[in-house]
Image: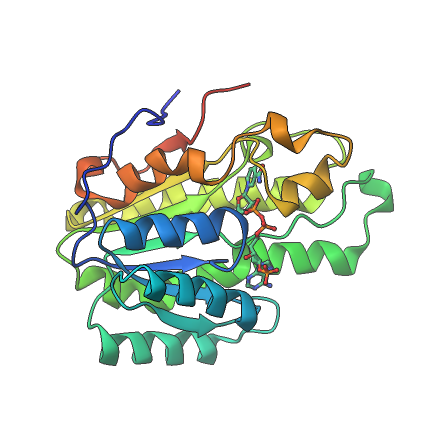
Length: 252
Ligand code: NAP
């Protein structure tokens, strides 16, 4: 297992790095955005609910951390033009991207495949893999402009071993792992971009509670507790690791 839960991130680990986090308004993405800002990064908060992004923005400002930016975007309706407009704005504002955490995700339904609603299946694939794929394509020039860029795709246990009833979510996470490997292999020769996947493991969030309504949330690690592997992957200590699968916590 590839897990850095014991990693002790130094205070200025992400100083002067520009890091984009998708799904930054809630759950793991929110914790990651705050952790990155607390370690010196300028964080671009991307998500679909503006009010949640503003709350994270305000918290970062209140702590006197590097001023973040907000980018409202819904992967369900976003077009190629939206991704290219976003890249243009980021290019003007920052000129490069040093980190990209693909974290936004949709659970869909946990139901037998024969009963799976095709429209919901499409929606899950759109949010979990298709949207992030085209966003990544648009952002490649900004990643290439970085001296040391880290792209992290959020996976899941069911993206590494299929499980009954997990339908589109599981399939989208397999696709995520596949895309991570393809992209990692393509950028290997560049030397300045690494691309890896990270499975958070069972974590106390709204998504987990929806998937396991009978579970005691207190028995789960919080998003804050799994941040060491996120920090390690976004910072310079993970240089040289490309195309690998990581776990944010040991198996339960
Ligand atoms: P969460 O609390 O439900 O957060 C998901 C985030 O994704 C939210 O910020 C949400 O925005 C955003 N999002 C959803 N649909 C979106 C869309 N159409 N466009 C833009 N943003 C969208 O879930 P989480 O547990 O933190 O999950 C984070 C990642 O970890 C996901 O990729 C998930 O698959 C993965 N994961 C989680 C666990 C776990 O146990 N929690 C385990 C394995 C993998 P809103 O808040 O505005 O809805």
